[in-house]
Length: 332
Image 1 (cartoon, rainbow, N blue to C red):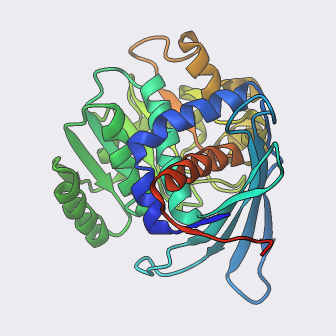
Image 2: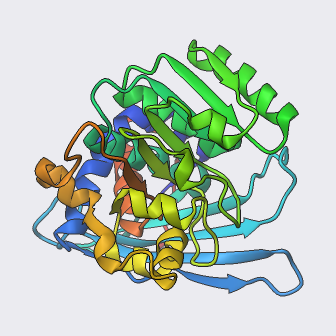
């Protein structure tokens, strides 16, 4: 078994290389060539944290070279914005399906960050207008920075506007992003002003209540909803959901945890049929995607274990080939 640390994950799986990995993973999800139990959360007694467990399998043993199963274990703790540990610390345990042996233990926070932004890039490539050039980022944390890199991987972004609740943090983020990506990045005084005129919008916040209203959206935009991953939180309001052509990564997960969609259904604004397709279905049949230049398309990202397994397998293969990480013999 190979232990692969964060530094190796970052080097071996840049976001542009992860996009095609996510494409194949999401196609497998939509073909149901996976096992994806709904994620479970366990509170940590006496601490402001919880353990998330995401087991799953990808492909059928004997039918695919990368058939694998495993589990992602993530500790989610409330920490200050500048804490070097971040909010997520964890690992992905990857097993070979044919032999039932462990292949790798892969550092999980960076793997999750990369595959999440790469999945958004895949959705953007499938749903956004080809001529999309302006990007709005709502939020100024790690996923905000990751999503700029991801959008640059699939569209010729010429300018970025960012909004965050803390103006000073947003300004520092904009300065850092502009230097990192060599693209103009400016701050906006509100989320509404950030998305005005934007072709692509990525919401990457920890907001519990909507930060973006349907009235703020414009025809032709594509929106990646990334920040909310539990049924009691939402980054957009009911009207925004109603106006969108709504796509998800996995229907079962969306109906269990997509807070924006569930709230709109409960309010009677839309029904479950508002989900037009999974992103893996669009990858197989582009006709399911954007119908016109004026459509507002939306990809609701929740994340599924198949994405982690596919990304971990890609990292493991590269680590094996290049000698990254440490090998251990569990039976020695």
